[in-house]
Structures are given as structure tokens and as C-alpha cells.
Length: 116
Image (cartoon, rainbow, N blue to C red; front, top):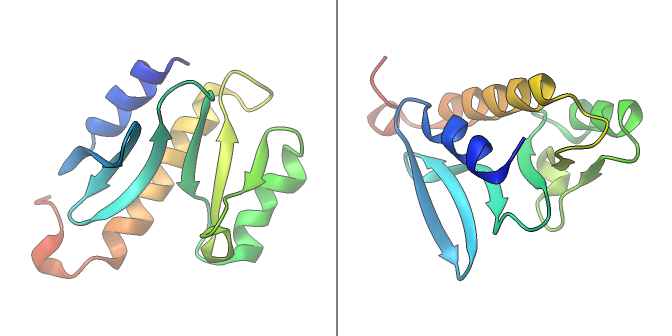
């Protein structure tokens, strides 16, 4: 899966929009919150909320030890970096995007949630 394919998929979510809060690092938000860290496309990876707790997110590390790592700084909150183009099938990455989006939307106040 390419950077552009992944970005397009993320932006297809209701209320999703692209931001670049750090020079050269693309994120996708819903409301005011990030649900996908895409970076600049050179790493072939995406940062996603992979569980409500660190323990839930650790399942990715056990299943894909070479392609899933705890995200720096926010990993304790259930965020992982998943490598694209490796052992993790594209379909599972897209499912993880869906889950990250749903988790973040669920944490938003009603006024910030996209219309359903």
C-alpha cells in the first residue's frame, strides 16, 4: 500500500481532514484529534490508536513483532506504528485505520463528532 493510497483511505472517513502540525509530517484528524500519523511517506508506516489500553495494543506487537512497534511519546496510550508493505496485510492495516478512527470519534464530545 502506498502513502497516497493510505492517505486517501484515511481521508475517506466522515469528517476526516489532513493537517501538517509539524513541517513535513502529515496527520489525519477527525474533529480536533489525530487518528492517523502518516509522516512524510518515506518510512512506509502509519501510527494508529491500536487499543484503548497499552495491553490491547500490545497484541499487534505479539502478532507482528517485526512490523509493529510502540509509538514514541504516546505509545503508553495504546498507539503503535505499523509498517506497511511488510508482514501486516494491507486489509489488516485498513481495519486498524477503521478501529483508530472509531476509537477517536468515540472519545470526541458530541459537538465535534462528524454527522452520521
